Image 1 (tube, rainbow, N blue to C red):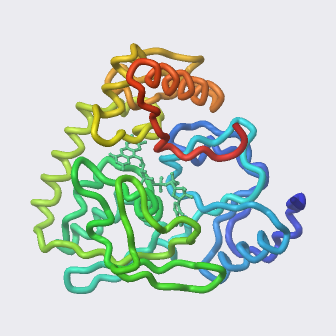
Image 2: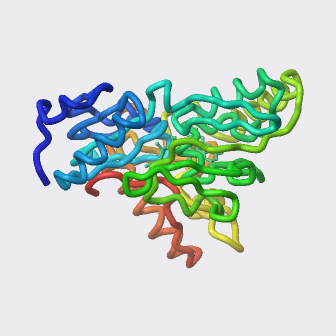
Length: 300
Ligand SMILES: Cc1cc2nc3c(=O)[nH]c(=O)nc-3n(C[C@H](O)[C@H](O)[C@H](O)COP(=O)(O)OP(=O)(O)OC[C@H]3O[C@@H](n4cnc5c(N)ncnc54)[C@H](O)[C@@H]3O)c2cc1C
């Protein structure tokens, strides 16, 4: 892989940072430097960055809010692309539908829709990140997920803009068939609801989350997927005696055992050792191999 030089990136009109610590871009506040972090100015600029990476055989990936990522202490060899420029978060309202740019933060999306008396997305309250990340992960809680509201997705595939309509889209538990695409925008079907009613539901959901989740420390939410047909991951982890167990500053939350929290200076290696120990012990105790919900980035 070619070494990235600042002068090679002079074509980029958006922001470029070399050796950017990923701990600045993840909710875990963990992660070594990425060779380059780029926030393209618009879609053409994004295409330029993607073409440059392809030509030079440089790895790249899109980061949303970084709320489902564990980035290696050694960082990421390649380009991290952020769609944080306002143009990637544009909103177009239609009757009962809203087309939203995938760079918009979910918090902002709920708020802006509520201002037009459009609701339905209150379940996303307290799920950090962007619309792009939510679609990729089919984010949801407790019984609703973003896929239920998605009618169309616009994306880049092989440098071309494509549209996926309802029949093309597959959403399942914390998963979608969108991998490999660069998600640009999505048309969401919403419900007519007053802003006051939406605000009440949002606050109720946030309160429930505060009661059940450890929100006082950096984390990525649930680390493991709930296995199907058996106890939820938090219960299996708790049964195996991990509640409160720590390696370095990475600790299993005392409030929700599927959360690993960063108590201050946790390293990605501490978290990954803890993950490893949990998987082995839960397998020994319950014969279930817990699968990761968190995405690992870089070398582990
Ligand atoms: C305190 C806390 C509570 C949480 N609670 C929940 C919960 O209740 N339910 C739930 O489902 N999740 C929960 N999460 C996890 C997380 O917030 C969601 O998975 C979220 O949707 C991830 O979005 P993101 O933008 O941060 O994605 P990132 O973490 O940045 O990325 C996730 C994946 O999406 C890809 N991606 C992001 N944007 C794009 C794009 N535009 N195009 C292509 N690929 C893209 C990334 O490459 C990566 O593979 C929680 C996290 C925290 C920290």
